[in-house]
Length: 315
Image (cartoon, one colour):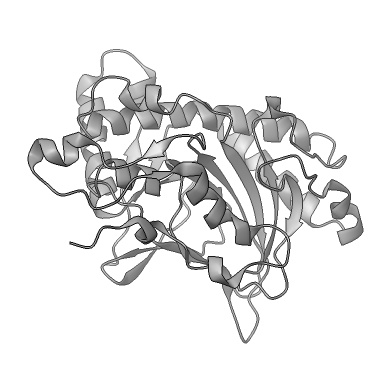
């Protein structure tokens, strides 16, 4: 039987009294974060109908002509290019996407059609931001940190962003949708159609994350890996484009404010007499180097391989 990432039932966290259910869920999440860096969640509090509608609307939007889609091209004010973009021709990743920041940010560029796209996008964004707060609090407990430590450390939600993706069908010569990478942020949520293609690497093997009805994929980002001194892992993952089919998905990045300093916490270093595995860094510097090559052309080839190992301490 092929290996698969764990699935966690979050329903105990939306009711009262099911402490055994919460304990079991936290045990599975803790193990998943240390072994895979990925898990799936069900009964997560976000309407499946809302997520399905968001996928339907993105499929409609990406089906428009380039001239229509480019009317929602990014402005220059946002930290990242909000609105519609397409990967540069020379980029290895073959996709187009729509990016947005929090609805209240003032940065977002929405298409006029489909008419309800803006409302649905903002609704999804708000629900996933709230879910991010819950998952962050669970991770806080799994790591044995003081109550609300991560909430207070990561209280500013202005750097959260969400991306709707359309991956083009594979060709006879290449099928790369999203090159192997790790996410720089805290926690990422993915919801996807039934086509598949998302894979996570464990011990050198690629494990497919099979789409499951009404579930969300969750993965740990570099910030949590560094804070925990690699107790929880930010796993390498990629998207392989399917043959003869487009792939539609959304990724929500529960992020960290750029001015935050990131380094291994003392709980995971001197308090247990372990050496830090990373030197500290300012998050916005790391985020900028990671995201630079995802903006408009020309992409910078020298930025393609920037990842958290840039800050690793060789022992």
